[in-house]
Amino acid sequence: AKLTPLDVPDSPRLLTILVSTAYYLARGLESETIFLPCTLLAKHFDCSSMTVSRLREMATEREYINIVEPHSFAPGRRNKSTVFRVNIDRLAPLDRHSEG
Image 1 (tube, helix red, strand yellow):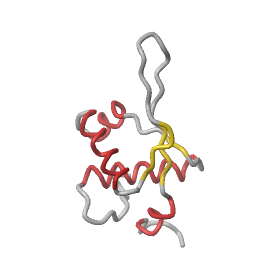
Image 2: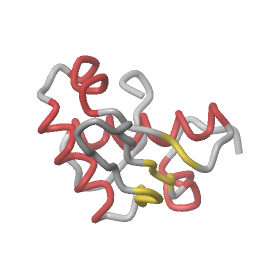
Image 3: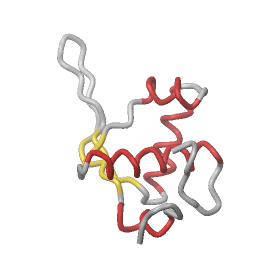
Image 4: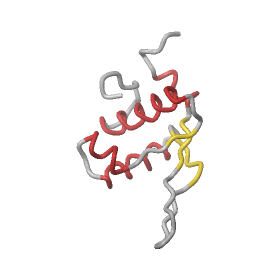
């Protein structure tokens, strides 16, 4: 995603990388739903977990990704991560590197 990012218009560099990561992950896994863990991505993007959280919000607001299932946290219970659906139809035209 860093080497061949999508051509996301009017977006900061890290948002472009996040959206590209989501797109390539969904395509590579051939899955409608994905996880975008803040802590893990923050390490790869060289930023804070809070920044990744804000980027996920921006990507959701711009309808590049949608929340399928929100996260849940309860002490003493198993936590659930946010589940996202990538808007492949919206992002595919931004993929300058795709075949076709």
